[in-house]
Image (cartoon, rainbow, N blue to C red; front, top):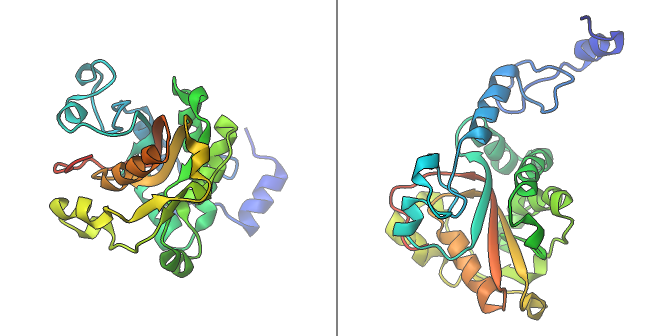
Length: 250
């Protein structure tokens, strides 16, 4: 079937390119991806993962809602949803959004994450959505907080408000990816604090949103602070999880 004439004209004047790899992409595709990246992303989304920690796990390895990994390393949050593993093309989409100053990709990532949240058995329990904050100095340099932008798109799936003021980053920290596993918990310890109006979290179920979870130490510290502010449950929604052999204490 031939494309409508206006599609051909748009391709000539403004050809569509894949947001992940830059290759030509179908102009009417649901996602701004080429066929190859679209297929790879579908495979990442379909891959099974542990509903508790979010790490890759075969269906046979998941028992009673958690995998062998999170039984060995007890985690502080109640459950996790993700789009997929931190692999291509999801990896490129995240890096381009965050480090190549393409915040327009955040709504796409948030929409994909929202689709996963919509089918989570606990999705209706969420009262408030809290993005992992950036320190003010890094936010000024970057110009935006990618977790905040993802959360704004995500809330369309749960209809809950985004509350940025309930969690603060009070100390700048080196990037976790640059540190040895044993140094990661120390790096973020005390980096977060309850925000203004956190008394409103008492008895509430919080959804903590971030772009990538690797060792889980940043998430663990945020969860600790949110629980200290009265949250009765903390769920986690991340765009991608990167399997990590030495997670440290979650």
